Image 1 (cartoon, rainbow, N blue to C red):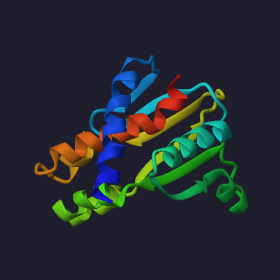
Image 2 (cartoon, rainbow, N blue to C red):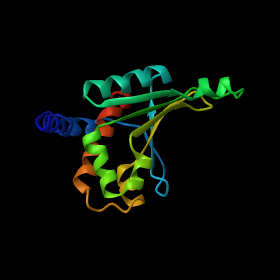
Image 3 (tube, helix red, strand yellow):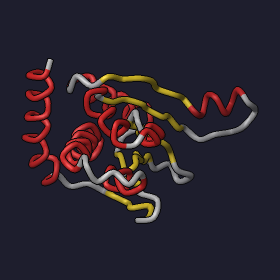
Amino acid sequence: MQRTISLFFMAVLSLTGIILSAPAAVVQAGTRDGVVVLESRYSVDETVRKIKGSVAEKGIMLFDDIDQAALGTAAGNQVRPSRLILFGNPALGTTFITANPVAGLDWPVRVLVYQTKDGTVRVAYTDFDWIAHRHGITSRKKEFKMASEVIKAVTAPVRQ
């Protein structure tokens, strides 16, 4: 198991160089809130499909895919397409919770895929450095760096 996790993270690290060199439309929501927003050239459904495929390909556990627009419609509200994808690697994610149990508010990882008023599709997630700062976790730098690399790898297919 430990060897599998190590091999997974070595693969993620090798992908990082490729990903970081790829062009990406990044819109920072603000340094206070730690939200990273990317622009996707795909529809909401196709973006979700690509992210879920990336999660599966990397052997990461998919916890849920919540269709917020469908929930809104059922409640009588008109909500533009919006899906919340929850995933994570328990071996990595729970290390944050062992450092500070309140970090459980930010795990598993959540990626929001939504359509703006003008039809643009965006992908948003919380920056892991911000999560570390939010919860005062200074003892897991290596793990937070790894989580940052993983989220970049998972969202890479929609950044192209």
